[in-house]
Length: 194
Image 1: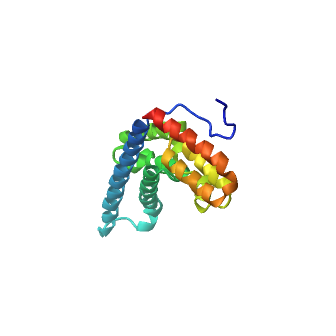
Image 2 (image 1 turned 45 degrees about the vertical axis):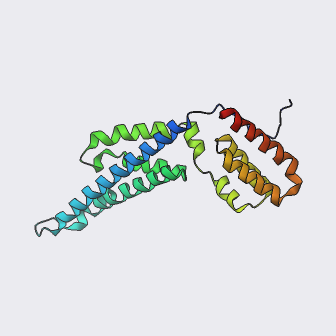
Image 3 (image 1 turned 180 degrees about the horizontal axis):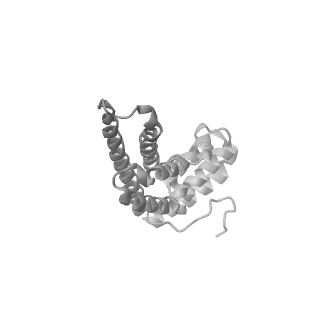
C-alpha cells in the first residue's frame, strides 16, 4: 500500500475523553472563581453607599480591575468550553490568576498554574479553532477547505472532516480523486478505532 503524500499527518490519538473532561473542569473552575470574584466586587461596591466612605475617585482604578478581570476570566473560560479563541482563553486564565483580586488568594494561584499547564498541552492547543478554521467556514478556496478538513482529521474530528471533504468535492470536482482517498483513509481510521 502506498503512502498518500497529501494526507494529513497521523498522530497517535490521545484519550479525548480525558482531555475534554480536563478542559471542562478547567473552564468550570474559572467560571465559578470568576463569578465569586464578581460577587466579591459587587459587595465592595456596596461599601460606597456608606456616607463616611472615601471618595470613589481615589479607588476607581482598583475597583475597575476587580470588575473587569473576572469578566475577562469568565469570557476566557467560556472560550475554553467552546474551544475558540485560544489567546482569549490564556488571557482569561491570566486574569483569574491575579492573587490580589480575591479573598482566597491561595486558591487562585494553584488553579491558574494548573490551567496554564493544561492549556499549553499541544493536543489541547490544537483542538481550539484557528483563524484558518474561521476562514474555511466561508470556503474561499479549495485549498482553504481542504486544509480545514485535514486539520479536522488531524485533531480526530473525523465526521466533521468527512463532511468538509464532501463539501469540497461538490464545489470543486477537480479534487474528487484526492478527496475520495482522504475520505477512505478517515473511514479506515474510524473502523480501526472502533
